[in-house]
Image 1 (tube, rainbow over the protein chains, first blue to last red):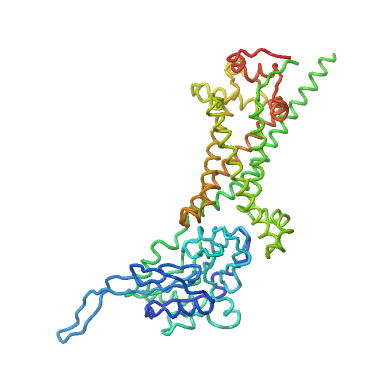
Image 2 (cartoon, each protein chain N blue to C red):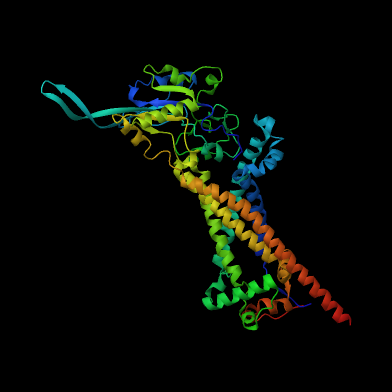
Length: 285
Length: 237
């Protein structure tokens, strides 16, 4: 891990994703690919509309589609009729840009930088392809490219630093993404939470720094997409957490143990020398 | 002075090369594990390679270490397997003999040895009589080392073939943890082993290991009495 100065959770930028507005058109997915010059690739069918089935080294943003039963209301002359219907909940997904990214902590060469804007970016030239980032990421985001290096969403840091919106944010026809200063976005997310919407990205585990810069919100109608998508994502990676503890134990415990044993050794040698000298003196007498 | 050969040539060769391999693999591995403390080392190594690799010296150094770690890891694994097979097949694997003693005797021996190492207390005569070529501490340390080596070797091979075998990120994360755990166990072994081998009570043993393999018979009478009796070793000039 290379020590980095991380911007606070309320510093830099963030994005609020309002899933209620998402129509699943994939304009964000295409815009991401287009802006970042990622090539097209062969894909495969999956049981859902999600295509490709997961993020890849060339697909840094993918719209996931989830299905569930949702309650709908039909207004009839006889009165309101509530019924259940299968609904599809699209969820645009990319790197979550954690407040304290475990991928950056695990990178042995410090190739993953956290910019002042809060973007978590892999520097391609510094990446050695060890894959530690992929093993540490609780959202399973970094993916290995054909050149052996790892790739993921850059938060369009090149656009942000030039006063533009991220490509996906700009391309969305229904205004799903609200990009802005992190403090404002967090307040907006908290307001939505107060109104009873399901919000994901605030108050997360300290493993990711307590939160992410991409915050998802949805009403009851689409909340199943958030629940299903993040059911097994975002949890601390136990093996990586254990590695972080083990590293401290080995480095500090090893150094302390060596010092302690060296001290004991010195005492033993001193004692042995004194005994030898006494023996020599007695023999000479 | 009467001297007895207690360390075979094969043991000395295997020990010396093991020492080299562990030292080299530790340095190259710990740099990857804790770059915040060892980036200076990666910088020194990477500086000449950085212009050719089109990157900064630290990244170049880590990459050089990573490649060497794999090459030396394979070589070390080969040494361990060959020497392990030799010991097993020739019936010379006696290092865990002390574990066959009753547990009460093992505790008594451990207490007496700890007293000797930490406070310079002389060994009680009944314990002295039962001391084998390898005492109970050596036997348990050997077990510790075997566990550490097994974790390092298996997880290391898995990590090296991670992409070829198509292992998932979760499996790779587990292998990385096991590799670090194996290293932690090995560090613990090395600390205790170096302490014991540098202790003045074991000086003749250290000289034998890095000398010609012979130790004074007088010292053996105090530290390996059961071994001398069992093999009916006659002191030679």
